[in-house]
Length: 330
Ligand SMILES: Cc1ncc(COP(=O)(O)O)c(C=O)c1O
Image (tube, rainbow, N blue to C red; front, side, top):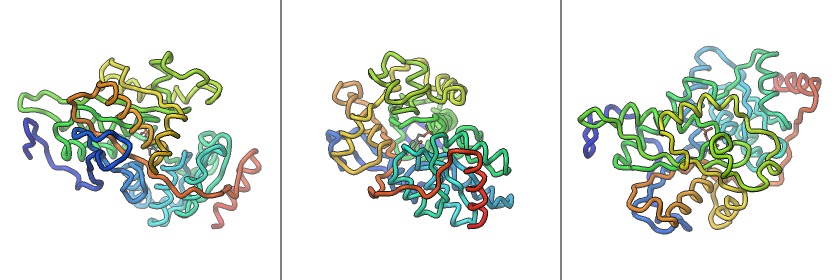
């Protein structure tokens, strides 16, 4: 047992990514109470390793040699990186409209890259038809356990934090962090201390804002991101987030592409990190975070911009089956 201020903590995972004061990062106004948790400085540039590394290690022990993953980039980069180290081939399905710098990084890490308009659908197809393990963090209960290591590190590095800003898509990493607070941040009277969670969402991944605060979505959201977000999949996770955070949903914010672009032009970072930083800056300016000790999770690093198109794309079942045969020969 370890003492930290009024809280008591038990055995922690070894710390793996550093904390830094926000004063090092333009254009955040220098603010002594903001700390950055630098998941972007991990081996693969995002917090995805916390789930994917142990998951792939376990699959390796089970004799698995192939996995499939639908990814907007970071999960594919991370799965390919650890897959290569472990001798597991990784079939990565990315959106044909996705970020091509991330797609290039997947290929550089040894992933087998396929572009399609429906990555989730085709990942399920490969998994069902060929029995390949589908790495789908948001449907894997173990993922929450693995993401708890991030929460534990934050509790240890900033025991008196009373707000955490995180980019949120499926909500699985936020849930892991919340669970670790629930489990570990307990005072001597057995009371749990969960900080305020401020979630940044963008694009089709903005299901939480869509579900609970539709009025806050920007004009043109439906045009920019046609079709509803993947709500059925996420409702269970979001309900659990709701239970843990409380009912104050004003703490989930939509960040527009323009706001992210603006943040990115000021300094070189990933879209996810730019979204979190934008919200932190916005709330600071508004005075909402006055006097609070705020942790901003920086997950996702900027990859070198490249002129890149994936070699493989799927438009039909025949394409998919041919691609699988090629994947097996590499
Ligand atoms: C860099 C980065 N940060 C945060 C997230 C959001 O994670 P989650 O799906 O756990 O909400 C993602 C998900 O795509 C991501 O790539």
